Amino acid sequence: MLTLLFGVYLLVLLRITVFREDFSFDHLMENGNINSELFTAYIPFLRGGFIGLFIYLFVGNIVWFVPLGGYLAWRFPRCGVWLATAAGFLLSLAIETSQYVFGVGVTELDDLVLNTAGTFLGAVFIKGIERCLKKRSNRKKKET
Image (cartoon, rainbow, N blue to C red; front, side, top):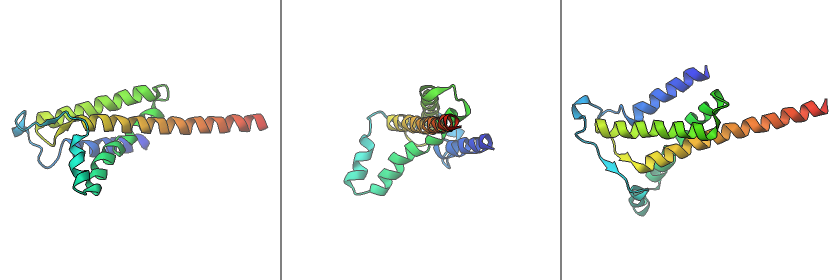
């Protein structure tokens, strides 16, 4: 069931990042924009008092990738946090590249960094829960 939900998550993620309303094969390599300056796009939002938009974009880029890291750490226990994080980086890179190629949104270095951070946080969260459960289980075994 969790794998099915993960598949739905990936479809939704691709829908909001690449296959948007303005997606079209007619715009291949035509409208791609790249912002390679780290976090500079957020400054006008903060200066202009658009805190909600800042939180939506900044935190949203992290939050949307937390499930990826969590799922990979849970589904592939030997995978480890760093391998899950690398997979998140590669998926984010694929999304940002697709945005450029298809001319949807803006390809941003910020997104790559924040998405990767979200994957890392998701993997660390699951590994932390696993560690706590293992310690708890070991304590119960010692008590019996």
